Image (cartoon, rainbow, N blue to C red; front, side, top):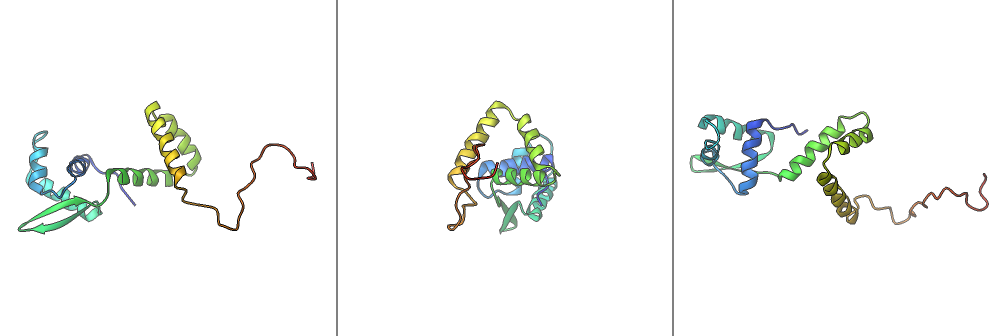
Length: 145
C-alpha cells in the first residue's frame, strides 16, 4: 500500500522525477541547499528510506549510490488516489465529493482522461455475450406491464 510522502521525501522525489536520470546524494543535497539548510546525512537517510519503500532503485557507482525513480509521478499520484478511494465505505459518494473539490480545469482534464480511457476499455465484453440493450423507459412489445 502506498503511503503519502513527507515534505522532504516529496521535495527529493520531485527533483528525481524532474531530472529524469540517476542522481547522487550530493546532487540532491546541493539543490536542496539552495532552499534550506540541510545535512548530507539527512538527504542520504531519506534517499535510503525511499529506496526501502520501493520508490527508488539504486546502483552503486564507486563509493556512492545513484538513485532513480521506479515509477513516474503520475503513477505515484494514481496509486495514492486509488489507496484513498479504497478506504471509503461509499466509493461513489467519495468520488462525488472529490469531483466537487476540483477546479474547472481539473474537471476538464478528467473529461479528457475519461475520453482516452474509453478508447482502451479494460473490461471488454466476452465474445459470446451481447451488449445490454439501453433502457429507454418503454415496455417492449409482448412484455408484461
